Image (cartoon, rainbow, N blue to C red; front, side, top):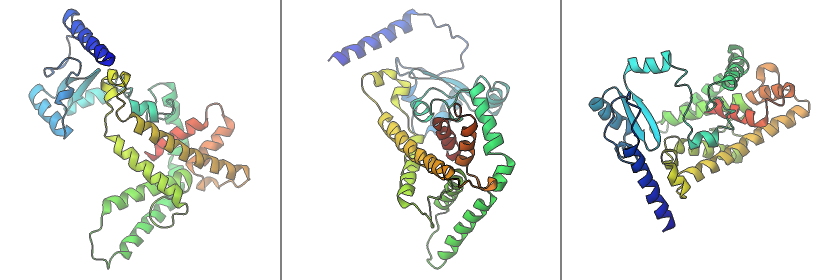
Length: 301
């Protein structure tokens, strides 16, 4: 009963503010009629692209939606998109503060989630010069060749089975094997998987990440729901983060053990973890394990 009382009190306060406080944001794009507290959330239905298309046809190519507590600009005109992402790109550079950013962003050490500023620029510079440089990518060309050859070999092996070949999953596995061999020197899909238990954990983490990728956390739009104990997908996201961090930390520790034993890889065969650990030797206060975790996940996403 106490929770219901506070919920009603909060709702009454919102309504009171809405009707008594004048709206200063007069220069907003067209917007559909909204409801108290939830705004336009009731209009958001699946499939999302169809809903947005219908709203855009009715209210214009640039429209304003209030999704709970979050003001949202919906842009579906090429010229308006160019205005936002080219002429005013710095204004729209940052991602919103959502649960997934808080849980997976590694304290803003991941280039995917860090706010635009000096830290983000340094992370981008590291990626361009140390990780994704032309020389670095060329040094891993043998990995790409080997993985494509492995996939073709699998296709040839299935030629007498007379069944439909599902190429989507094969290209998905090809991509992840490429990335993980460049990152950690390991493959987790298909043949020649050396560590089956670790591979299974990695596959579960990938599937979990995909499942929450398109999910919405109600607390991101209605914070009061989190306050009263409605957690949405928060528990699942935090559990996934812990599993992912444990696995990636294991990979880092494995490379540290190899490095401490004097078994350094040649420069042209160095993995992403090797490169970052070498940088950590020179700047340990900046290249922390947390920062390395964030960089690894950004490159494997």
